[in-house]
Length: 463
Image: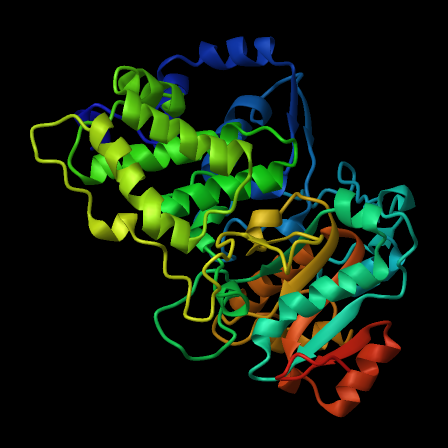
């Protein structure tokens, strides 16, 4: 067991919790006296471990506790439909109509987006759009929700076309103050080249899916730099801390890969500065890198990296290095990340796509990565998992089906995932699908249901 090695896992805490209640039943009364009100948000994401012990403490037996759970079963995307983690104890939502209340109103978006998303709810609730706040977009953009149908070799044009479309319908102020994302059901590239588009990677060669993690672990130092840039862009506050710490983490990762001792410190930049304090030349290089690419915001290009900064960064890591082994960082970690042959050498590889120096910036990621978030405009990209997502959900897009009754495990997962994606935007919802997804008759039906249709040719032309 892990506990014998001196550390404990998350699930161990539940074992100890149940053991405490078994051995000392009075502990339950102390807990409910201390916490007379239990409020659970996002209750649809509770696991069986969580629901079981909460029920045992706060619900089971005589109690004066007030319990309130809030959530949306249609957005339960963090457990697979047949997962053992799905609660069987204190199931949410409760079937007792005396205590359950549906709240179908959303103040995030208007009725047009509600109409598109509602069929994907596995538990239909009569979704009603009461928003959005038009002050946040500067103009009413109703009636511009679009399905982009792209030809087989036109995937690389989807994001540039979406960028142009955003510039067409939003004001410059809205592009600056708004947030825009492009997401897919699957965002990591598989090992084969079949079934394109397979993932979000197929729409932008420079996309780095590992950087969407809360604590990304890139394979290169440049990847750490790009991860810090992505966090900075996403945060939008102008605080440089995330970039500085990500770069410092990259230095320490180089030390670790070289076999050196890595001191775990919460403030990695401060630690490196302390170590380099009496090594003036290397310390100056470290500070210069931070000034150029963090404070001044210069672009770290492949030429700059290969000609100058790869050597200087390696020298910094060597100066931080402590250990019995000889310092030698694997060259692959210091190489410029391979983002594909078609990627410009100065591309901002990572998660933020920007067509040129003008706004908007579009964050790429998985649908899971935007759950709970609100964005001005959302582009949902077609991806492949045992079939194309939207191809499998075509009947719901055409509003020929509603809900999840009678559907298998995989389609239930697809429905919940895309319900989440389609309920993220306040103003604009777009889809990007291969042109052969629909027949001409089905395209007509989409138009009749309120979608605009735009076709992207292999040369990037839009009709």
